[in-house]
Amino acid sequence: MKMNKRTSNKGSFLSRKQFELLIVCIATGFMIGYSYNQAKSTRSTVDTTLFEKEESYREELIVQQERNKELSEEVTALQKKIRKYEKSFVANEKEYEKLGEDAENMRLLLGELKGEGKGIRVTLRDGDYNPTAANPNDYIVHESHVFKLLNELKIAGAQAITINGQRIVANSYIRCNGPVITIDGTQHPAPFVIEAVGESATLTASLNMDGGVIDQLVNENIVVSLEENQHLIMPKVNMKS
Image 1 (cartoon, rainbow, N blue to C red):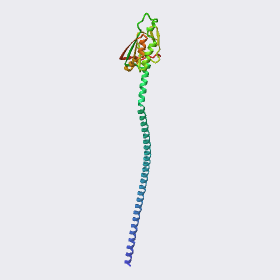
Image 2 (cartoon, helix red, strand yellow; image 1 turned 30 degrees about the vertical axis):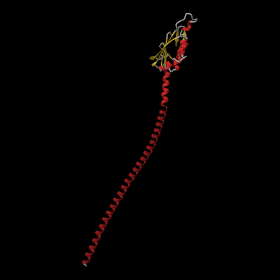
Image 3 (cartoon, rainbow, N blue to C red; image 1 turned 180 degrees about the vertical axis):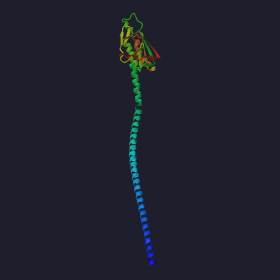
Image 4 (cartoon, one colour; image 1 turned 135 degrees about the vertical axis):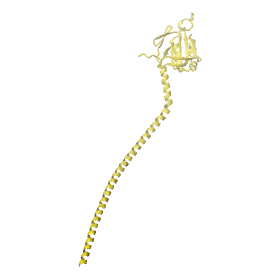
């Protein structure tokens, strides 16, 4: 009887140990599971945040790429326009230069610019009076003689002209009054010194043509002298308001 009681107590003791071990295992399992769930939840949150940031960066990159494409297209279009303007400028450069030269020549003829350069000097003097002649005016320089010379010089390419130092412009008024000539209200007595800036050889050849202006003036009793390759300086016209 005593022996059976011990056996029963021993079995009861082992059951209690097993129960305690079971409790410990359950608690440990619960803790491990809880820790795993927490780690999983944390990892899921981190993954979600990283994914959202990655998506945001990807969208920003796409926007920047599209903007860069637009800017590249704008640059290409502007470069095409620049090349077009450059081609147009090169094509018209000679025309612009010619227009500039024409404008400067026009300003010279209008007296807006000082005239300076090589040219010729022509002097017109009254002829020696012949007492037997019926009309002494036939030996005097008139405005018609001056006009003949001026017109020929302009046709030959004179860039600037003066008479007795007074600048002649496109609308200058010249009138003969006896032995003097009035130019734009200023009187000038003979001799009349006419200077012209331009190609000296061309101007001289134009005046010396057979039957040309000089021959005509000489036939009308006017004394003409011509000096070539003169360095001439002409003042610009003082414009009156």
